[in-house]
Length: 123
Image (cartoon, rainbow, N blue to C red):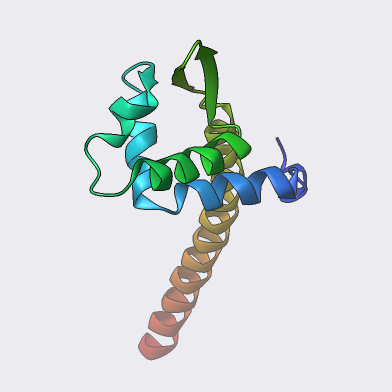
């Protein structure tokens, strides 16, 4: 993708993805789901917050498209869908490439200026 395409990457999706991963609890949930599917109660176990609070975090992750839920009777199993993270990573990488290019140009400019300054001092 080009830089311009990245800037125009579905802003709502990107906003939801970045908002979802901004919270450490949600990042921990994603890390756990990267290991494999899990039940809501399993995901909630390591946290010292209510099951209701974990459910709210899961809804944010679901709205961002990062988590899929499958209901089997009373059991809710969740799985990771990392595609939105990949898209956000591509968006960030476009900015990284942009700034690397700018910094490389600045470095070239400063080196040329330094050479000119040395030349003037000798002459």
